[in-house]
Amino acid sequence: MSSASPELTVDSVTGIDVTLPVAGAGARAFAFLIDWVIRLLLALAWYAAAAVIYNRDLSLALPPETDARWFAGVLAPSLAIYLLYHYVLELIMRGRTPGKRMAGVIIMSRDGSTPSVGALLTRNVFRLIDGLPLFYGLGLIAVVATHEHRRIGDLAAGTLLVYDTPGLRMPVAAHVPLADPRYDALATELASELLDRWPLLTPEARRQLGLQLLARQGLETEELRDADEATLHARLEGLVASSTQRAT
Image 1 (spheres, rainbow, N blue to C red):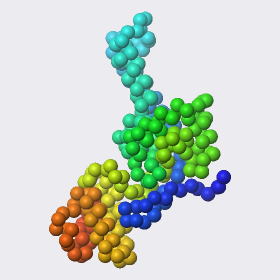
Image 2: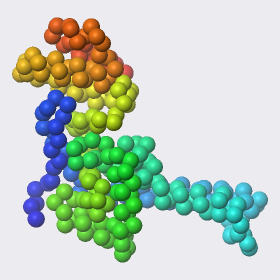
Image 3: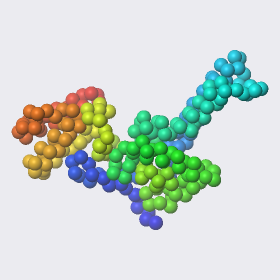
Image 4: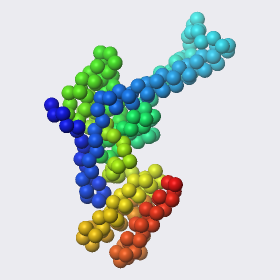
């Protein structure tokens, strides 16, 4: 097994290969520990509050006879918070959780895009296997044994855990909606990269890539399609400047 740090190489919007460092067992364990503490505290908080309301006093004791209201209002939501924490937050935060964000990692598909709903579901269902026999034993063995540090859930879902650093230039997945304000930072970075390499590209490549970037932000117009290179270059500079101003 090679001692070199594994990497994922993908194509950016500008056609330039981008290398993403793959996270190892240490980063995974750190992220999981933080998320485990958070989801446990959230589940216990719900249980405590719901039990107090159900018992109509400050007691957290189980009622002598449990009924449907206790299961539906106290137990079921607590279990849902604990068991569905990863899946729900990874969907909402696009491959991240609070623990992953603190550890500086993110889940990605092998093409460098955000995993689909099905891939995230598969990855989380396989936690039941990765967790065997105790403390994610099989998952840890898989992470150590595989070249790209992938647990069984990653192998089944076609995902990896990579370091989420400011230098990453991820391609925008096909299902990402246009003009999504959450992608201002990414659009700025890609536009800056294109402007830096502008003299090295052919006129056709400059026009095609520039229009693609502007279209992803909902900025392409009929006039731009017939505009000269100077106008297109100016619009890209404006995209970078406006996004930078919003960030500051």
